[in-house]
Image 1 (spheres, rainbow, N blue to C red):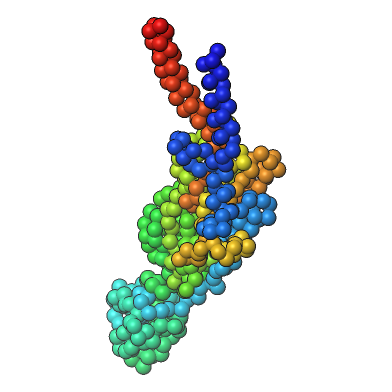
Image 2: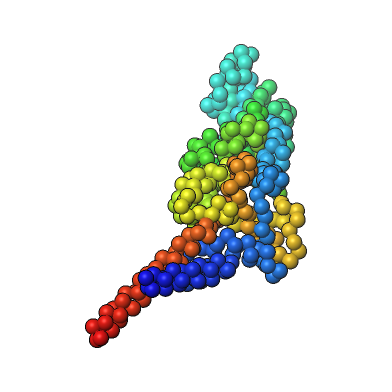
Length: 401
C-alpha cells in the first residue's frame, strides 16, 4: 500500500509540473516543434518569420499572385507576318526564259513552259543555282548584275530582272521563288522531339503549331512549362494551361523563341501526416487540401488539428501587411508561415483554394497529449525500475531480520 501511495504521489507531482510547462522537455523524442513553439517563435519581438492565418482574404490574394504571366495578356497575337517580303539570309531560286530566237539563254532545263503560260510554249530558259541573299541584301544575276532583293517581294525582283535584260534578251521572263525562308522563322528548343526552326507563313502559325512541328513535348504536358521570348519580353506558362485555354495559344511573330522545359514541382510534408515525403505535383498546381490528401491526411491519434503550417518565402506585396522588422532576402522575399486550423469546418473551403508552391514545406505538429504520453511512458519505465529496486531492498531487509 505504501508503495502504491509513493507511485501515485510521484505521478501527481510530475503531471502537475508538466502541466505548468508550455513546452515539453527537450530530451523527449519528437519529429519537430510543437504548435506552441512555432507560434511563440513567430510572435517573438525579434522574430524572423511572419505568421499568417489562412483566411478567405489571404487565399484570394495568393490566387491573384499565382495567376502569374499570361501569354494572351503579355504578348498577345502577333501581327500576321508578311512572308512575301524577302530578307537577308533567305535562299532564292531564279529561272529566266526568253522567246525564240533566244539571244542569251538556251535550253537550260528551266521549268516547263506550262508554268509561265501557253503563250511561251516555245520559250527557252535557264535555272540558276540557288542563291542566298547577301548581308547587303543583294543577289547576282548573269547579264543583269547585282539585284536588290531584301525588303522586296518576288514579283518586284522578277520585274527588275526582266527590265535589266529587256535590251539583251528576247522578251525575257523571270521567275523568283523562295527556296528557304531564314528571316520569318520561329525557334523551338527544349523538351521537344527535335529542336528546330520553322518558317512562318501567311496563315499565322500558333504556339501549339510550332510545338507540334518540333515533334511535340517529350514529357507529360502536366509537368511541362512553355516559355515564349519575344524581343525583350519573356513569358512562361504551364503547357497544360495553353492546351486548355485557346486564348493562350497565341500567333507567333518572326524571331520568337519557344522553350519547352520539364519542371516537376514538389512539396515536402513532415510531422504527424499519413506519410513524411517529398511529393511531386503538376505544373498547373495543387491546393493545400489536395496536398494533405496526397500525403494520407493527418494521423488522427497523433496530430494537432490546430497545428498545420505551410512554410515558404513570399514577396511582401503579395500579402501587403508584412512587418518592417521581418528580414528580406536577396530577392526581396520574406519567410512566411501560414497557419491552418483544421478544427474549423468552414476553413476547408479556404484550404481547397490555397495554392501550393514549388518547394513548400507542410508541417503538422504533434498534439500536446502525445508529448504527455511520451513523458509518462518514460516515467513509467523509470518508476518501474525504481520500484523493483525498492522491492528488492525491502526483501533483503526482511530476510536480514
